[in-house]
Image 1 (cartoon, rainbow, N blue to C red):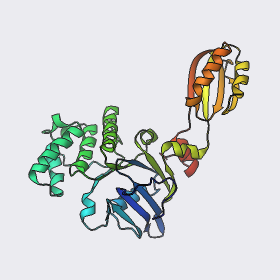
Image 2 (tube, rainbow, N blue to C red):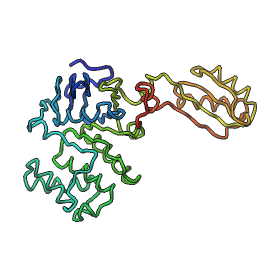
Image 3 (cartoon, rainbow, N blue to C red):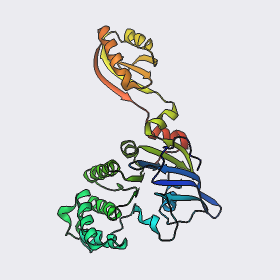
Image 4 (cartoon, helix red, strand yellow):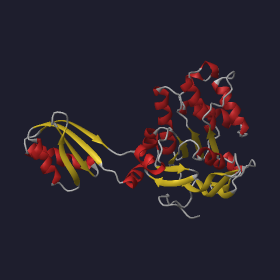
Length: 325
């Protein structure tokens, strides 16, 4: 397999997709997509509506047959036929797929039985999953009595009960309250720390930046960029902007800032001329030097604001559209 730039080099990836193609009539929904995910790695797949990420997920999970290319999970080829490879995948769809008239525990038991888990192992695993998703205290409650956030967490639990090697999460925090969203993100972080490979799609850039070791940006069916969030931001070649509100001779301070290595520009700004804006690479590493310089010039810094380029800027630059359009 020819790895696109930025691929993690690992001898035994959990997920290995090679040159996937899927067409619907004259439209190519997935066009030569290759990616890998290592054990313990969380990989974020980002794309605007219609970009091909849902089709890619379905190919990964064996729900669609590719027109070309292959998918392997833990060395086993994935196909639309039921088989050993599919048992290694836990798929959590965006829509909650639970039985509302069954209890929390009964839902987890049901999904465990689909994977033919032995009874003792199933009961032990259900207890483990209830703890993971923080629903032990609601185990006997019917699903239709739960809040939306709790249902989302149980939806993830249903994908975990058979202890998959690869967990695929499709927009797991859509429509949940902030507390439940935080709980879900904490759980996903824990999965990676425990060695599970995670494929994660989201419309929330802050989630990708917080959770994902690597991110793939898909547009018009093609993987147009891939790397860590920091590597992707570097592709855009944007600079950080540091805004320092201060009192003192700000014109002299701006002039002195311009002489600092890695500073690409500095000017006195603000409605009242009480601010210096500095354009710089890697502002956080350079900020102590800027503050020391202010002290030397008797400039009193009142506040500091750093505006860093983020994945939203990268996405807009690469695809020409905002992620949520």
